Picture 1 (cartoon, helix red, strand yellow):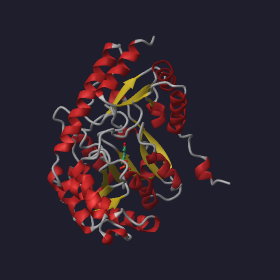
Picture 2: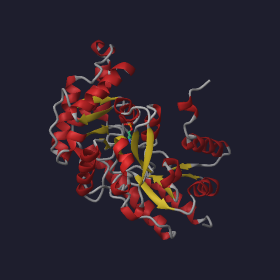
Picture 3: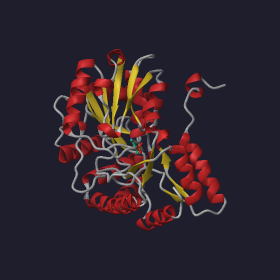
Length: 382
Ligand SMILES: *Cc1c(COP(=O)(O)O)cnc(C)c1O
């Protein structure tokens, strides 16, 4: 019954983990879930209030605009300017997304013909690959290894693949490795994209989740970046709004226009009250973001020092709410964690072949639960 593009999809490991987790819970195990990349913190009240107020207004009960309300696009442009010093034309260089996953999944429809290559980081957010496959493109993995600070080595991309590539994904601060990228990397990417006529899409979902004074840049800060690419961003991680489904794509006006063309044919925009809430988030006080980072940083420190005391190889991330840890075999380590300690972690191989040899912890649980997780791990023979 199903089309090949569905039948050929790799098995979705995360669904299997959910099943195993549910089974453990049914057995009465008090499972500590460090698997999910979904903040446990609440959306700040001033953002919720903006939604509630605007939801009462009849004017907001109709179809929204396809590309985002002018006021939302303006708020995005102002935020980009204030935060990154990047100038954007809100009419032509900003579009709303129903979460950045919407943009990630649909951008290949804009750029990729059947058989064209899409360059994807491995390990990486799984939708980079599935979006490419839905557009009948081919994916070429760019391995992210510890030796290269989890940055892709552009010289390793075969010349013929680079020539046939239409789209390249980059994602720093990175999920799942929690790596960050230096400005020199973005410089290299822009030059590579220009030389090979490739559109770059920077997924910057974690730019605001950063520690120890680190401030992540935008790809668009690099000279020439807006000529070769766009950036996708999201309110999900910054303001604890994963369930709200709001994000943005910004940058090269032609690519943004193309994305708008696809989207006007598949969705009808973001509910206006959600856009008003997003305006309140982007334009309002930002202490809530600093507060969240402080919480993640404390959890990170408890987890990393606990794991190091247990003898595991793990470094302290400068950004994201993930900790990427070296293990001999990712699936059997994750299974042992669940069966012997009642802890869910994500096996690295679920993010692509080059994720093998690692597991990902998400510090999206309280510091007490993370302490308890470390204590449980002390009882296990590793
Ligand atoms: C969470 C996440 C997103 C954003 O998802 P939304 O659809 O905006 O909720 C995008 N990319 C990566 C790598 C992520 O981890």
